[in-house]
Amino acid sequence: MTRTSRLTLRIAIAAILGASALMVSEQAFVGRSDLVVTTADARIGRPLTPLSYAGVARRTTRRAVIGGAAVGYGAAAAAPRAGCVQVVDAYGRIITRCY
Image (cartoon, rainbow, N blue to C red):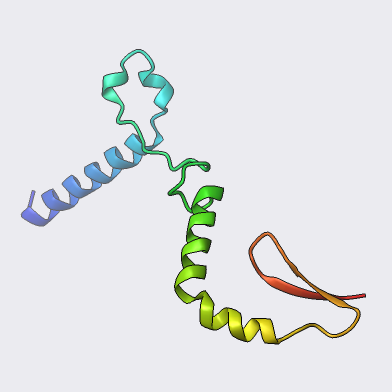
């Protein structure tokens, strides 16, 4: 075998082993927990995860304190027309609804 074909064979074997390792079920190692590397989960509800309510409240408060004075002044001057109300949806967007 030439040097190039050996390298190609090694890369192919490594790719096959890597792909098969990704397909191995974690249930195969139930008895031996030391063989499996545990994963870190960012669970909703922890304060520093992006979708937790505590994290959203913390970031919203920080943004309001840091940049809210100038932005809030301009927004307070703009009022909806008669028969319309401004509502805030779950994502913090202000929507004007007219009835």
